[in-house]
Image 1 (cartoon, rainbow, N blue to C red):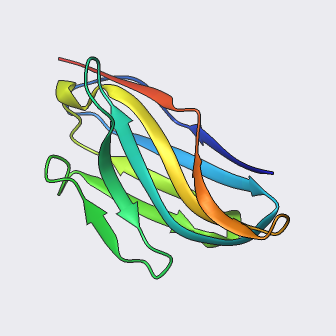
Image 2: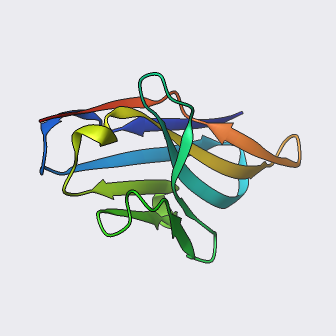
Length: 121
């Protein structure tokens, strides 16, 4: 069984920062691509940032220059540093990872439960 557990959400004012964490645990053989997605009120889930196992990153245009995705492979954790937050960043943020489990031996997408980020103006 593989689990993704997010933390670090909260309520902040515009211009402030937050750091989200997502720890992957369980029967892990290998963690491949990881990413953060978000779903704002009345909106569809959208990509925020991704990072490959090789360290290549990709960002949504709306967060480029403000958000940074990174990993600590020793802790099986992916982070999202969010600076200069705006009210339009308000959303539930979800962690995603492509994980190959040990038993059963297969690779699939896993999602965290989500963490709320609210940015007030």
